[in-house]
Image 1: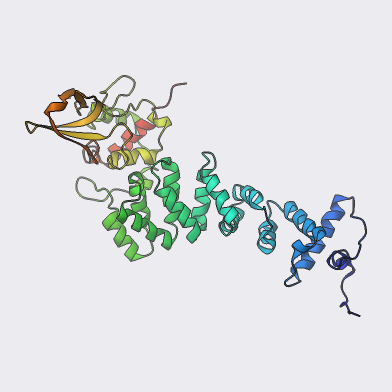
Image 2 (image 1 turned 30 degrees about the vertical axis):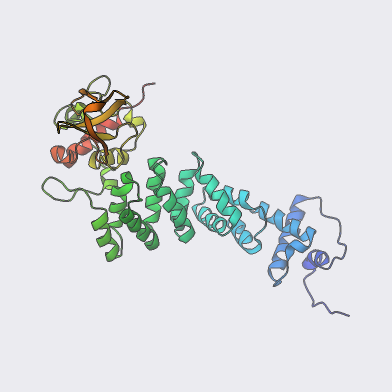
Length: 378
């Protein structure tokens, strides 16, 4: 006869289940049921090698306790211990919750499971939840998280805010920093996040990372070659919108190519509602690195004619008979096809570089302050 060691009376219901001995009817009172489930779970945790899935009653007790602990630190502990099937939806709720520690731990658990990784990829495809998931992966910063962040940072079709969050997340860990250097070297890092990537890597604790970043992600300098403040710091500075308007229409030459409320030339994008579309950081990037994120339909083309003339600007139209190029002066040049020797899309924006040399750092901040006020009309 097998001798069972003396145990607490409180463990009897659990032992009855384990040994397939009929137990008393389940308690109708939910508080009593919760106490019984907690006892069963604590007992199982002390039994090495026991497969709780082998007994339906025990499995249900475990799952009830996991459900009951949703939103608490115990939830993560129980999921780690029991790794139940089909837990992805609950981990997703925890990942998207307000508890940052629980969010990071939930993401870590999901990345360890095939189904969890699929759930994360689905979340990253959601317009509403993607940024929150990207930020959480950045806080986690392990290899699997960095893999997803790298995919986001290299995808030019994603919104700037998501790619920016992915870059910031990668910059939190040394392995992520190395990935950013590699992406910049291979030119897979989308251009409009290069300034923030360089600024973040310039603060790395690793001297080699800082040196590599300076080579592949150089930061803009002022006209006197003095360094400018990093772009994330520039984005926190406040300017004078009235001064920005004067610069926009005058010295800064912005109105030469952009229309705001019917004022300016129709060469580049209409900026009348730019404050409703871009963050300060994205606006700063557009000015400091105009070729980094050229908008669709605003690519710069160069046409070489048979006579050797070069005409550059936006390609307005192209037919079997002619190509129409709009120059920086807002002049439409119609060039017959039979007079074109070569037409080539340029990687350079039609917008001139180093406009901040004209305005200075404070002038740049003022122009952006003005652009922030350009909101969509109600």
